[in-house]
Length: 301
Ligand SMILES: Nc1ncnc2c1ncn2[C@@H]1O[C@H](COP(=O)(O)OP(=O)(O)OP(=O)(O)O)[C@@H](O)[C@H]1O
Ligand SMILES: [Mg+2]
Image (cartoon, rainbow, N blue to C red; front, side, top):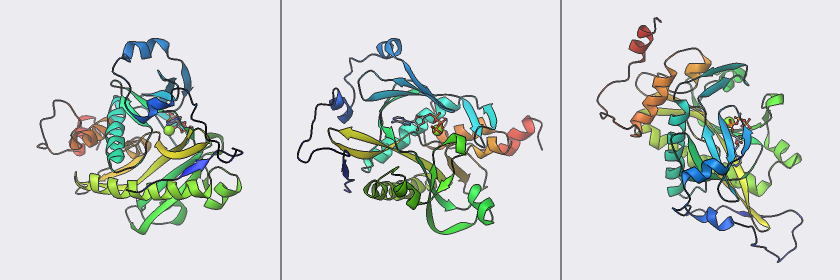
């Protein structure tokens, strides 16, 4: 199994590795069963509200709760709306994907899902870089470089964007990351090799349910163990941050339905969950997903 590196805390003394981070042991495994949801609910404090999620203090130091909202934004939050039930589906899909990635040795922040909209995760120091992995041209790369949408790329591309809403998350080169110290060279090696492994795994996982993984965005964070840190996969993996196309029809099953006013976004997110086998009361893979019929029902051509 691949081992991802540990980084020494800047300025730490050689040979002195303190393990005195209170509550850190909880991060190694599941929480004790005695931690009840009502306790979590009553004690928690909001840490941050983002566009798609709210973060609350977790029940133990070093943990946080991610609450998945139905709010949807696009084009750096210039377009805002709601996709009914999105938070519930993204919570479930992200749980599933992170659990499967953990099984192939990718270190992640995921601890466990708490309820329909919340999951308990390890608190990380988020590395301010959005890592975008592309297999097929779509979205900004098509616009920027004039490559037709749907054109398979000669090989998988990794792009980096600086996480800063005020600047519109500008694209950056690895040189910027090194120059401004956003991540070390060793951390970037771990990040890029994890991104490729995640891509290989997810391409296969989605291909098995007749979906092409066109591109997706990852976020990574640092967790500290005494004077050493390591990089883990954080945030979420869901149709909000992936482009997923049906392999037969080319139908978009992701947030582009919202971005481009295509309609049927709730059904598309549900369809991804259904094909992954995550929907309760699922009748099995019998019916064919028909977005055309759905659009007619909504009075669209
Ligand atoms: N394990 C983690 N520890 C700490 N912060 C995390 C962790 N996982 C994700 N986050 C951060 O939590 C926030 C999630 O909220 P949301 O996805 O709504 O943010 P956002 O509006 O997309 O904003 P941002 O531009 O910061 O990503 C993000 O800022 C993300 O970087
Ligand atoms: Mg986000």
